[in-house]
Length: 288
Image 1 (cartoon, helix red, strand yellow):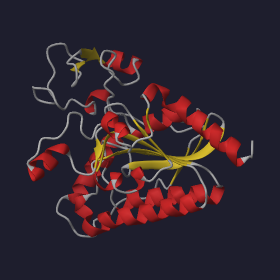
Image 2 (cartoon, one colour; image 1 turned 90 degrees about the vertical axis):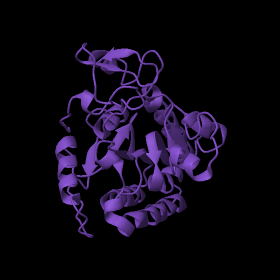
Image 3 (cartoon, helix red, strand yellow; image 1 turned 90 degrees about the horizontal axis):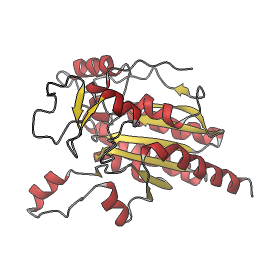
Image 4 (cartoon, helix red, strand yellow; image 1 turned 45 degrees about the vertical axis):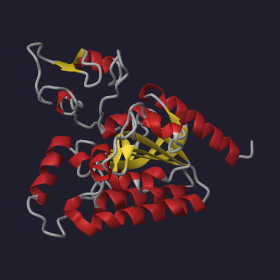
Protein backbone atom coordinates (compact mmCIF):
# COMPACT_ATOMS: atom_id res chain seq x y z
CA UNK A 1 0.00 0.00 0.00
CA UNK A 2 1.34 3.45 -0.89
CA UNK A 3 2.10 5.86 1.91
CA UNK A 4 2.81 9.28 0.39
CA UNK A 5 3.88 12.20 2.52
CA UNK A 6 1.84 15.40 2.41
CA UNK A 7 2.77 18.94 3.30
CA UNK A 8 0.40 20.86 5.59
CA UNK A 9 -2.86 21.73 3.84
CA UNK A 10 -2.30 25.47 4.24
CA UNK A 11 0.53 25.14 1.72
CA UNK A 12 -1.89 24.49 -1.12
CA UNK A 13 -5.37 25.70 -0.13
CA UNK A 14 -6.65 28.08 -2.79
CA UNK A 15 -6.76 31.54 -1.23
CA UNK A 16 -6.94 33.42 -4.51
CA UNK A 17 -9.62 36.03 -4.95
CA UNK A 18 -9.59 37.51 -1.44
CA UNK A 19 -8.81 41.15 -0.84
CA UNK A 20 -5.78 40.64 1.35
CA UNK A 21 -2.55 38.91 0.40
CA UNK A 22 -3.22 35.30 -0.71
CA UNK A 23 -0.85 33.97 1.94
CA UNK A 24 -1.96 36.15 4.83
CA UNK A 25 -3.80 34.87 7.90
CA UNK A 26 -5.42 36.87 10.63
CA UNK A 27 -4.69 36.48 14.35
CA UNK A 28 -6.71 33.27 14.45
CA UNK A 29 -3.69 31.12 13.63
CA UNK A 30 -4.52 28.02 11.62
CA UNK A 31 -7.75 29.47 10.17
CA UNK A 32 -8.30 30.23 6.50
CA UNK A 33 -10.82 32.45 4.70
CA UNK A 34 -12.94 30.83 2.01
CA UNK A 35 -12.21 32.84 -1.16
CA UNK A 36 -15.87 32.63 -2.22
CA UNK A 37 -17.88 33.44 0.91
CA UNK A 38 -15.10 34.70 3.28
CA UNK A 39 -16.07 32.23 6.02
CA UNK A 40 -13.12 31.50 8.29
CA UNK A 41 -12.44 27.78 8.46
CA UNK A 42 -10.06 25.77 10.59
CA UNK A 43 -7.90 23.06 9.07
CA UNK A 44 -9.92 20.49 11.07
CA UNK A 45 -13.19 21.79 9.55
CA UNK A 46 -11.74 21.60 6.04
CA UNK A 47 -10.62 18.01 6.56
CA UNK A 48 -13.96 17.07 8.13
CA UNK A 49 -15.82 18.51 5.15
CA UNK A 50 -13.68 16.71 2.57
CA UNK A 51 -11.85 19.85 1.45
CA UNK A 52 -14.80 22.06 0.64
CA UNK A 53 -16.48 24.94 2.41
CA UNK A 54 -19.52 23.83 4.45
CA UNK A 55 -21.22 27.18 3.84
CA UNK A 56 -20.88 27.75 0.09
CA UNK A 57 -19.54 24.33 -1.06
CA UNK A 58 -16.38 25.91 -2.54
CA UNK A 59 -14.08 23.01 -3.49
CA UNK A 60 -10.49 23.55 -2.38
CA UNK A 61 -7.50 22.10 -4.22
CA UNK A 62 -6.30 18.67 -3.12
CA UNK A 63 -3.24 16.64 -4.03
CA UNK A 64 -3.05 13.96 -6.71
CA UNK A 65 -2.56 11.27 -4.07
CA UNK A 66 -5.64 12.46 -2.18
CA UNK A 67 -7.70 12.16 -5.34
CA UNK A 68 -6.51 8.61 -5.86
CA UNK A 69 -7.16 7.78 -2.21
CA UNK A 70 -10.71 9.13 -2.51
CA UNK A 71 -11.53 7.18 -5.67
CA UNK A 72 -9.80 3.79 -5.39
CA UNK A 73 -10.63 0.94 -3.04
CA UNK A 74 -8.19 1.00 -0.15
CA UNK A 75 -4.80 -0.51 -0.88
CA UNK A 76 -5.56 -1.39 -4.51
CA UNK A 77 -3.66 1.30 -6.42
CA UNK A 78 -0.48 0.21 -8.21
CA UNK A 79 1.54 3.15 -9.51
CA UNK A 80 3.06 3.04 -12.98
CA UNK A 81 6.04 4.89 -14.45
CA UNK A 82 7.03 6.55 -11.18
CA UNK A 83 10.64 6.90 -12.38
CA UNK A 84 9.92 9.23 -15.31
CA UNK A 85 11.34 12.71 -14.75
CA UNK A 86 11.66 15.81 -16.94
CA UNK A 87 14.89 17.01 -18.49
CA UNK A 88 15.72 20.46 -19.80
CA UNK A 89 16.07 19.89 -23.55
CA UNK A 90 15.95 23.61 -24.41
CA UNK A 91 18.32 24.61 -21.59
CA UNK A 92 15.64 26.99 -20.35
CA UNK A 93 17.04 29.24 -17.59
CA UNK A 94 16.23 28.10 -14.04
CA UNK A 95 14.00 25.24 -15.26
CA UNK A 96 16.09 22.57 -13.54
CA UNK A 97 15.85 24.46 -10.24
CA UNK A 98 12.08 24.87 -10.60
CA UNK A 99 11.66 21.16 -11.25
CA UNK A 100 13.75 20.38 -8.18
CA UNK A 101 11.69 22.71 -5.97
CA UNK A 102 8.43 21.31 -7.29
CA UNK A 103 9.60 17.78 -6.59
CA UNK A 104 10.66 18.69 -3.06
CA UNK A 105 7.38 20.49 -2.36
CA UNK A 106 5.16 17.68 -3.64
CA UNK A 107 7.33 14.58 -3.05
CA UNK A 108 6.57 13.68 -6.67
CA UNK A 109 8.82 13.41 -9.73
CA UNK A 110 6.23 15.03 -12.05
CA UNK A 111 2.79 16.63 -12.27
CA UNK A 112 0.75 13.45 -12.71
CA UNK A 113 0.34 10.07 -11.04
CA UNK A 114 -0.91 7.11 -13.10
CA UNK A 115 -1.47 3.45 -12.43
CA UNK A 116 -3.96 0.62 -12.05
CA UNK A 117 -6.54 0.51 -9.28
CA UNK A 118 -9.89 -0.90 -8.28
CA UNK A 119 -13.00 1.26 -7.85
CA UNK A 120 -15.99 -0.46 -6.31
CA UNK A 121 -14.49 -3.85 -7.05
CA UNK A 122 -13.88 -3.05 -10.73
CA UNK A 123 -10.39 -2.74 -12.20
CA UNK A 124 -9.48 0.40 -14.13
CA UNK A 125 -6.52 2.61 -15.02
CA UNK A 126 -6.49 5.79 -12.96
CA UNK A 127 -4.53 9.03 -13.19
CA UNK A 128 -4.56 12.28 -11.23
CA UNK A 129 -2.75 15.55 -11.94
CA UNK A 130 -0.90 17.39 -9.16
CA UNK A 131 -1.79 21.12 -8.98
CA UNK A 132 1.22 21.95 -6.79
CA UNK A 133 3.76 20.67 -9.33
CA UNK A 134 4.25 23.74 -11.54
CA UNK A 135 0.47 24.21 -11.56
CA UNK A 136 -0.07 20.79 -13.08
CA UNK A 137 1.44 21.99 -16.33
CA UNK A 138 1.86 19.46 -19.16
CA UNK A 139 5.37 18.81 -20.35
CA UNK A 140 6.86 15.81 -22.12
CA UNK A 141 6.64 13.52 -19.10
CA UNK A 142 2.99 14.33 -18.33
CA UNK A 143 2.11 13.66 -21.97
CA UNK A 144 4.10 10.43 -21.98
CA UNK A 145 2.46 9.17 -18.80
CA UNK A 146 -1.02 9.91 -20.15
CA UNK A 147 -0.16 7.98 -23.32
CA UNK A 148 1.25 5.06 -21.34
CA UNK A 149 -1.87 5.03 -19.17
CA UNK A 150 -4.03 4.80 -22.31
CA UNK A 151 -1.81 2.08 -23.75
CA UNK A 152 -1.92 0.16 -20.45
CA UNK A 153 -5.71 0.38 -20.47
CA UNK A 154 -5.79 -1.02 -24.00
CA UNK A 155 -3.41 -3.87 -23.16
CA UNK A 156 -5.64 -4.91 -20.25
CA UNK A 157 -9.01 -3.93 -21.79
CA UNK A 158 -9.73 -1.64 -18.85
CA UNK A 159 -11.52 1.72 -18.52
CA UNK A 160 -9.36 4.83 -18.14
CA UNK A 161 -10.22 7.56 -15.61
CA UNK A 162 -8.17 10.77 -15.42
CA UNK A 163 -8.60 13.58 -12.90
CA UNK A 164 -7.37 16.78 -14.56
CA UNK A 165 -6.06 19.99 -13.00
CA UNK A 166 -3.68 22.09 -15.06
CA UNK A 167 -2.49 25.54 -15.98
CA UNK A 168 -1.78 24.32 -19.53
CA UNK A 169 1.30 23.42 -21.55
CA UNK A 170 4.71 23.96 -19.90
CA UNK A 171 6.40 26.85 -21.66
CA UNK A 172 9.89 25.80 -20.51
CA UNK A 173 9.73 22.87 -22.95
CA UNK A 174 8.45 24.89 -25.89
CA UNK A 175 7.26 22.88 -28.89
CA UNK A 176 8.04 19.61 -27.09
CA UNK A 177 5.33 20.53 -24.62
CA UNK A 178 2.83 21.65 -27.26
CA UNK A 179 3.25 18.44 -29.24
CA UNK A 180 1.90 16.52 -26.24
CA UNK A 181 -1.55 17.81 -27.21
CA UNK A 182 -1.44 15.87 -30.48
CA UNK A 183 0.34 12.92 -28.90
CA UNK A 184 -2.18 12.42 -26.09
CA UNK A 185 -5.12 13.03 -28.44
CA UNK A 186 -3.85 10.29 -30.75
CA UNK A 187 -3.50 7.88 -27.82
CA UNK A 188 -7.06 8.62 -26.68
CA UNK A 189 -8.22 8.13 -30.27
CA UNK A 190 -6.77 4.61 -30.26
CA UNK A 191 -8.43 3.95 -26.91
CA UNK A 192 -11.75 5.02 -28.40
CA UNK A 193 -11.27 2.77 -31.42
CA UNK A 194 -10.69 -0.12 -29.02
CA UNK A 195 -14.15 0.52 -27.55
CA UNK A 196 -12.91 1.22 -24.03
CA UNK A 197 -14.54 3.62 -21.60
CA UNK A 198 -12.72 6.89 -20.97
CA UNK A 199 -13.82 9.28 -18.21
CA UNK A 200 -12.28 12.62 -17.24
CA UNK A 201 -12.89 14.65 -14.08
CA UNK A 202 -12.20 18.34 -14.69
CA UNK A 203 -11.27 20.20 -11.51
CA UNK A 204 -10.30 23.78 -10.73
CA UNK A 205 -8.55 24.89 -12.85
CA UNK A 206 -8.31 22.85 -16.05
CA UNK A 207 -6.96 25.13 -18.76
CA UNK A 208 -4.70 25.48 -21.78
CA UNK A 209 -3.34 22.52 -23.70
CA UNK A 210 -4.77 19.95 -21.29
CA UNK A 211 -8.29 21.23 -21.89
CA UNK A 212 -7.62 21.37 -25.63
CA UNK A 213 -6.47 17.73 -25.75
CA UNK A 214 -7.05 14.66 -23.61
CA UNK A 215 -9.22 16.33 -20.94
CA UNK A 216 -12.02 17.09 -23.43
CA UNK A 217 -11.97 13.85 -25.43
CA UNK A 218 -13.63 11.53 -22.91
CA UNK A 219 -16.80 9.53 -23.37
CA UNK A 220 -18.04 11.07 -20.13
CA UNK A 221 -16.74 14.46 -18.93
CA UNK A 222 -17.42 15.27 -15.29
CA UNK A 223 -16.84 18.69 -13.74
CA UNK A 224 -16.42 19.63 -10.11
CA UNK A 225 -18.68 22.48 -8.93
CA UNK A 226 -17.33 25.95 -9.69
CA UNK A 227 -14.24 24.72 -11.55
CA UNK A 228 -12.63 27.06 -14.10
CA UNK A 229 -12.40 25.12 -17.37
CA UNK A 230 -11.25 26.55 -20.69
CA UNK A 231 -8.36 27.13 -23.05
CA UNK A 232 -7.58 30.79 -22.29
CA UNK A 233 -8.58 32.50 -19.07
CA UNK A 234 -11.54 34.92 -19.07
CA UNK A 235 -9.33 37.92 -18.26
CA UNK A 236 -7.20 37.36 -21.38
CA UNK A 237 -10.33 36.86 -23.51
CA UNK A 238 -11.85 40.11 -22.29
CA UNK A 239 -8.62 42.03 -22.91
CA UNK A 240 -8.28 40.55 -26.40
CA UNK A 241 -11.88 40.95 -27.57
CA UNK A 242 -12.73 44.10 -25.64
CA UNK A 243 -16.04 42.53 -24.63
CA UNK A 244 -17.51 41.75 -21.23
CA UNK A 245 -18.03 38.02 -20.75
CA UNK A 246 -21.24 36.52 -19.32
CA UNK A 247 -21.42 35.86 -15.59
CA UNK A 248 -19.91 32.52 -14.68
CA UNK A 249 -18.20 32.17 -18.05
CA UNK A 250 -15.92 29.08 -18.21
CA UNK A 251 -17.18 27.77 -14.86
CA UNK A 252 -18.52 24.21 -14.68
CA UNK A 253 -22.14 25.32 -14.42
CA UNK A 254 -21.87 27.51 -17.53
CA UNK A 255 -20.15 24.75 -19.50
CA UNK A 256 -22.78 22.19 -18.50
CA UNK A 257 -25.49 24.49 -19.87
CA UNK A 258 -23.58 24.84 -23.14
CA UNK A 259 -22.84 21.15 -23.67
CA UNK A 260 -19.16 20.82 -22.80
CA UNK A 261 -19.74 18.80 -19.63
CA UNK A 262 -21.97 15.78 -19.15
CA UNK A 263 -22.49 16.20 -15.43
CA UNK A 264 -21.33 18.23 -12.42
CA UNK A 265 -20.61 16.11 -9.38
CA UNK A 266 -19.48 17.21 -5.91
CA UNK A 267 -16.22 15.64 -4.79
CA UNK A 268 -17.87 13.77 -1.91
CA UNK A 269 -20.11 11.92 -4.38
CA UNK A 270 -17.53 11.39 -7.14
CA UNK A 271 -16.58 7.83 -6.21
CA UNK A 272 -20.20 6.65 -6.06
CA UNK A 273 -20.85 8.14 -9.52
CA UNK A 274 -17.80 6.39 -10.97
CA UNK A 275 -18.91 3.09 -9.47
CA UNK A 276 -22.31 3.42 -11.14
CA UNK A 277 -20.76 4.36 -14.48
CA UNK A 278 -18.26 1.51 -14.36
CA UNK A 279 -20.99 -0.96 -13.41
CA UNK A 280 -23.18 0.13 -16.33
CA UNK A 281 -20.23 -0.11 -18.71
CA UNK A 282 -19.17 -3.49 -17.39
CA UNK A 283 -22.71 -4.78 -17.66
CA UNK A 284 -22.93 -3.61 -21.26
CA UNK A 285 -19.61 -5.27 -22.17
CA UNK A 286 -20.85 -8.52 -20.63
CA UNK A 287 -24.06 -8.30 -22.62
CA UNK A 288 -26.23 -7.92 -19.54
